[in-house]
Image (cartoon, rainbow, N blue to C red; front, side):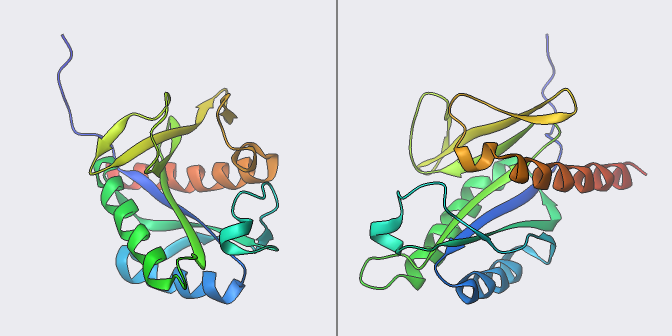
Amino acid sequence: MSKPSKAEPVKLIFSLFAQEAATINETIKTLSSLYGKPDFISAIVPFDYTDYYRSEMGHDLVRRFLAMEKLIQPEELPDVKLATNEIEEQSASDSHRKINIDPGYISKAHLILATGKSYTHRPYLRDGIYADLTLVYQGKKFCSLPWTYPDYADEKQLLIFIKIRDKYLLQLRMLDN
């Protein structure tokens, strides 16, 4: 029989994209006020993997990834997603978002994103939020799955996630000492 135990803390991450880098940078400040300071902020890169957001957010979107220094418990993810939904709504104009914020976390075994959309690979968490198993860590690397978004499967992003995971593993070791 297995004995329930508390989950290890996880590394809170965010994907932020918008038309303006300034919008992303302002949102980073807002997220920092809620979740503490970031210990990783990626360079600004084009978000050109899909046209899905064009009608709502415009074209020439740019993106940054962010990881927070403070670790969280995995069960906090729905609260983070609900808070980021509120940030998106507050910054919207004429029902069009100016920023898209995708929160998630990195653990030893995987990268999970939070979503409000149900699907076969997305178990329900609570309060209308689902966990999207986006990447799994196997063979010393993150591996995509058949449903992984192409931008998360891109080699450049996978290298970012490895960096973040390495920092996370160091933080876990420091917690054990």
